[in-house]
Image (tube, rainbow, N blue to C red):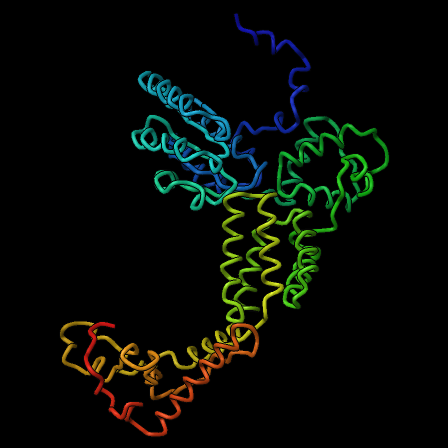
Length: 456
């Protein structure tokens, strides 16, 4: 007996489903916001036209239609669709699905296996996919919100094409809203400010957006809803924040300047403001990576490692737990001694390189490119630093046309004070050698060091 035989007779059957489910596209043309994948001559369009899918990794934030797109692809190329979530699937369930796929393959029906949240799967789960992807038992589509190169085995990423899905922008959300209004036979009356706030509150998540629209459509009709009405009906605080507009850049500027000014409290506050408003924590971590080298650098060389570790924590753990690592990185950069000497040195080096693009390095620090050049003067006079006291020979490494330049000028802050003393001592030794002319600090001339060391 078919338990669902009378479903079509129930007039309200469709109305009981969530709005996001009712608006799932049935044609590739109906997919919103992914034109780079579904537009004319785009990758998925070409696969559909050829009726041949390859294994795919869909990478993108939540609520943008990864599951919907996988289901639609299976329908459009005539494949079975089998879906699992990596958070609760077992190896036994997957092996049973593979065996069933082999049976259908013998009948001429191919299987598309969809694994959602694949970044959360234990390694032994994803490894079961390798042989069946390799021999064509299944075509796999894996969905992840985290970078595949960090979260999936190389065997998986080498067998599947990574396609990035984008969060919904305002244009895409407006199209979703128009479809929702047509589906419900109602128009959502919003002020311009409320519409912009609703779009921003969605954070690019189409499913979340449609759930909010459904709540608002259930509100009693009346005057257009304002921002205060959204807060009341949705029970959510609407942040004055636009990730592409002034709100974003104002907070980002305040965040960076507070950390540059060594105010860890303000840095944490502005970082929290941005996260609560929907900012991707990776934006903050990228800013911290830049500041670790541009604002701190050699004043405390350990800070860059702390920020890199925080970024790795975010990629492996995700929010909200990775918020602690983000906070640690903010405090580390803010409380470290500051120096922009490396930042300035790189600028000077780039300017000097641009002004002297064709100057050749001195012959004594070059290796012979081929055996035919071995008899020439490559490396003649090179002094192997470790043969000298303190592993320092005071030899010149600059082209004669340029002469020795001061590009990096360390400050008197943090660990850089030690670097300044060290480089000052080395420069003095070089000056002494230059003053004596060709002889080195041991009274020998270039080329008189104990032995040639080969290719150093």
